Amino acid sequence: MGSLDEINPASEMFQAQANLYKTIYGYLNGMVLKCAVELSIPDIIHNHAQPITIPKLASILQIHPTKTAYVDRMVHLLLHNGFLAKTKVGNEEAFTLTASSKLLLKGNEPCLAPMVTGFIATSMIEPFDMLDKWFKGEEKTVTETVFGVGWWDVLERDSGYMKAFNEAMASDSRMVNMALRKCEWAFEGLDSVVDVGGGTGTTARVIAEAYPDLECVVFDLPQVVQGLCGHKNLSFVGGSMFESIPSAHAVLLKWVCHNWDDESCIKILEKSREAISGKKGGKVMIIDAVINEEKDGHAMTEVKLLYDVLMLAVNGKERNEKQWETLLLAAGFKRHKITPFFGFRSIIEAFPY
Ligand SMILES: C[S@@+](CC[C@H](N)C(=O)[O-])C[C@H]1O[C@@H](n2cnc3c(N)ncnc32)[C@H](O)[C@@H]1O
Image (tube, rainbow, N blue to C red; front, side, top):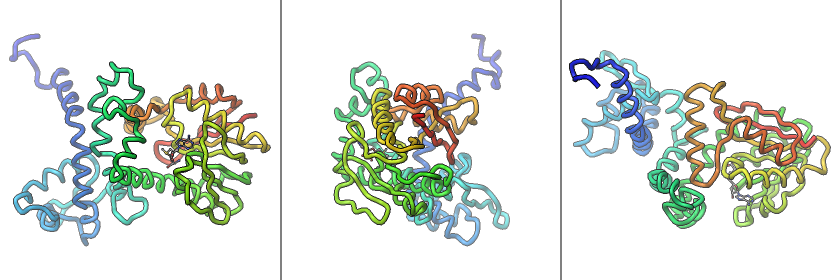
């Protein structure tokens, strides 16, 4: 390396430093977004009759008077990250919501604010501070490395956090469900569907309502479906997908496979194939991400790769097309079709014939 005089400030080395620091401090993007949600900044801007100036926003926020001068720091990072847009009110700069921050409006549908508060949380973040320890140890999941128990037990121990986590999952589901309502092609010709790992039935309720001639069964662990009542074409069955799945024309696995390693996934898929074997034209429908770095843009791939690392918390993973194909062949399916769903997930239809 030459002397300081020889170093061009625009050189590759300084660009590299900027990239490095961007990643080092990247976690602050999430923290600032979480703070914005907790201070109801999107709601305040939404309820304001016109684009909001920083002094006006600061005057409405319920914060300590000594902190009003700091509001612009939050606003400018939110602006940079695409959560706010800048305009003018008179001569003053003012801010409006963007498509991303409109997803955070409480009481709106869809509202992903619970995803922000549920996933940017200590129990979720802490394990990833110990990834190196997990790599060196024998624990199956990064959650076990840190807490000594698996993810679902972590939730069991902390009912407050479990509630926040479940709300986050439900908010995401509601958004996916909006799209499912419009997927007539996927349910066409089917007389019954079993939503395996369907939780408390958020998705199945939507399907049952949208397709009244379709018999919908929610299948989940007995403790999850205990006490839940069906209605018209919707019913609940308790059991384990590793043992036996109620037979149906189609099996839906929405956001289930990515929670499991390949060996477990093959078992789930085999049981799913058995469940549809009695019906002509049966299929398994998987809703999950499909990593495709060549087709997807940079931002879309980043979401999928971040999820892939997040799944280390439960020994799961996100998969690319080849990995899905390998799993499905191993589970006895003859062919499959991947259709991009809305956003970063796809519907993978698997056929045993
Ligand atoms: C990530 S959640 C997905 C829930 C839902 N499909 C959705 O999209 O929101 C995984 C679900 O799998 C269920 N599950 C875990 N082990 C199971 C098993 N052995 N048999 C059936 N369901 C199981 C969990 O109770 C949970 O509801």
